[in-house]
Length: 316
Length: 290
Image (cartoon, rainbow over all chains, first blue to last red; front, side, top):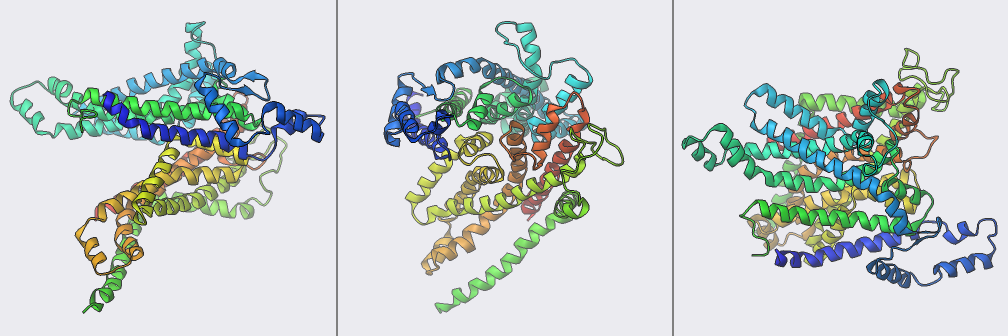
């Protein structure tokens, strides 16, 4: 496993390096000058130059990039020019909200996706299979924001069962916090869950045709044992891959969910820093998302190897 | 003797090109294809003819605000008494113009990038690494980055959809190139002195084409969702221009006063997505039927 991880290092480093350059360069390519914005009512040339010097914007981009990256390695994420606060504290304030949403949604993806997939993959009745098939396809096709709108209309407006806007920290008040979390998390999770379910179902159908299932059948194993021990166990690999792949989608979807449900998370921070051109905040957020996506991908492959003894990482 | 294969080759392509087109067209003979095509044609016509059908434009204000759906206002009216159906049809113009321009371009550029491995192996591998970086950015995050550079608007959305689609087309084209380059007939053609360009156009591209066309149709649905997602967040097309996403964004603000506000634009968006999905399913079926 160590050897496998070592082999992945160059490509991971390249992706992270390229993303950091993109994250650093993109906001700076935008028209407009932070110094002019900061100068506000006194935009004289001298004043602007002084501000640029103070912020270090007069140095070459390469030096600025190097400063930023070496700061990151020392745990210094930088300062927001516009809000006069450290980026770390800005992110720290919002982190909990997004993590709560993402973790809860991922749990739902795993539970709902596996349940629907196993049901669709093991039922023998054609009508149940058709219904589950259709249901999964609809879940995959409908984007999370439309599911969110439907949930808000049904559970937030027509029946006022759950709050459709705002948030309460789950850590401080679990009972109320969960209520605020249910609608956005379900909306975020259903579509990826449909994807996981569909993959699991296809995989189970494929595994059912394998010779060893016939053999188990011939030896007189019960259908239940065949499904659980022989089919399901050998199908989980694809579900794990699907879950790993969906996490990136989930993070992107979280940005929209935060906007729809008025949650004050990292997505909202990213959007506000785009509109206010606060690029020291933005570059950290962009790099953070890419890091999370890369880590998820590696963890997926490790879990896959743990599940399937045929894959021996690093032995080739 | 040496002329023989060269004169035979163009005839063979002419024969193989028409069945290809015929195969794509056969998608529109299946029920799914017919329904999908009908939905899309009606939507494109409505979008094109919007100024003729609704000469008042999308900003015409009426007396009643937040009216529910009625015969006069199919989707009701918004906070300024504007007809939401009219605004939705005008919004459709933005969405359709985005996906119909960005997606074909994205597939074409992606294919070229994928085939760049034919020029030199080193270039092909390098391009793949770059496409991997794009994959690292989930659709909406890419959009956020581009909006940061370009400012919110049609062009940022266009580029998001275009760049986001590159890796899929690139991988499909590269896959075809890698799988075909060692085949005997490709080697034979190479030995006969067929140029690299002809080799790619006649032998490699037809093998990738089916998958890329279907992939393009799938990416159109994603494009519609990217537009809606970014507009809901507030980084899409800027008001007063309506797009389906902008209408959802506005509707969400008044969801308690006027729950019907978002239903119209949302169902139109869903209908557009269903139309494109049906088409891509039908194309997929037609391509795999041979």
